[in-house]
Every structure is written in C-alpha cells, then in structure tokens.
Image 1: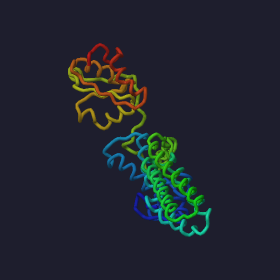
Image 2: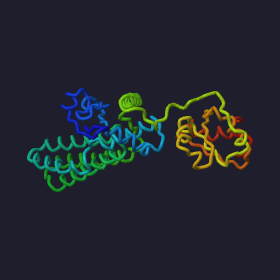
Image 3: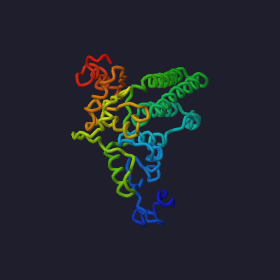
Image 4: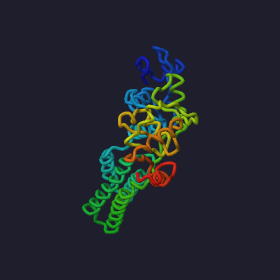
Length: 314
C-alpha cells in the first residue's frame, strides 16, 4: 500500500514491522486492509474518493453522499465473473464429463444454481445481476443445443431439454424483476463514521465535509437594505441536509434564488427570507424531495400550509 504522504510503497511486512507506519516518512496508515473482514479499503483509495467527491476540494459533500459514493465504487471494484469468462470452463467440463450420464446434469444444475443465486444477490448492483441473468439464458441455449444435437437417448433428451428450458425461464424471469429487487449497502453508516474519525485523527480535518445542519434559534442580523428586495425563485428541500448542501456550494448565488427546507432551515434567517419572498407575486417555487410518500407530499404542503403559500396562487 502506498503512503499518501510520500508515495512510498509499503509491503505488509514493512507496515507490520513499523507499527502501521510508512518505512520512509513514518506517516501512520489510517487503514490496514488485511485486518478488515468484509470490505477492504486502503489509504490511497479513501484519499482518492474524498478528492473525487469534492472535485479536488472545490465542493462540499455530506457523510451520506460519501456512503453512496464509496459503496458504488467498492461495488464496481469487487471481483465478479467476467461476461463470458465462465463459458470456456463450462463447455470444457461438459465435454470432459460427457462420457457419463449424470455428471453433466449435475454440472449444469450447479452452474444454473450459481448464476440464479448471483442474479438475486443484494450485494451486487443492477448491471451485475442482469449479467448473471443473461448468463442463465445463454446456458439454457447451450444445454438445449447439446441435447438436440448430441443425445440419442430419449429419456436423457427430455431431461436435458427440461434443464435447458429451466435455465432460460429463470434467466428471463430474473431480467424482468431485477429492478424490483433491493440492493444492500456493502458498508454501513457507522462504518463511514468510524472511517472518517480515524482518517481525520491521522490526516487532519476534511474541509469539505458538512456537519449536521446547525438548527440555531438565534436570528441573524440582516441588513435592512437587503430585506427590501425579493427573489424570483425559491428552492424548498424536504431535508435540512440538502438545503445545507446547496447553500454551502453557492447554488443560491449561481442561480439567484433563495434556499430553504420544509423544516425551517436555516432558522437564523428563515422568517426574514419568507417576508422577502412574499413580496413577489410572480415567485416560482421549486420543491426537491425524496421519492417517498412524505417527500411527494411536499408540494401539497407548500400549497396548503398557511406558514408557506396558502391562498397565494403560486
């Protein structure tokens, strides 16, 4: 593993002998992948993830965004069977065992079971699961071809045809329902929290990661000249964390709009901002929400809540 401080490549025995430090600059490694049970990460991997998600420290991001980002990157980097890498071993095993009757059947059923279970795995992403489902269809076609062209025994022919049709059916069914299957995270929010704490203890604070939104009740002092104006657009988010993210990344400056959350964030200027917004009868309001019942109800809430835009016609 390379040291992020000096770039020296440290082998496991070097890291172990030096108590988890770089043999050249003595910088402490935040992670030791060989001691991790399920998900294994390295210091360069984590450093690059932080650099990429922040666009080289130009954008703020939230811990939850980092969770999604790392999960997606780890999923892509995990080893999975190649698209057609299994095909040659499959044909070879069938050819070698073709002199017997039952071994090819057992081998084919084993392949079908492996691809079927993989196509349902919640640890794989949609693309990988679809690939395994397509492999099932390919196996079915191959088995049917072997059964039709090579077998002379009618009972065995029937068995092979049934197995081939089963593989095609399972593959086709899985492709149709893959989008409905859940996808589990490879890592948890507690792991992300532990990794971030460990990283910042060793390498210093991550400047672009956002803390929890600060819900202060103390009103901020706003220049009276500013409050005389209004906005053309308002963005309302269903969570304070998304509003915080947009504000931190200057979305309101770049798009000349106000940004608030339905929960009243930022509280320090919420009332003042609402007074300014109500001055503009042509105000356009945009709602950003999650695709769940609570989120989808955000627009209705904005239209019917007296604290927002009830009886305004907006």
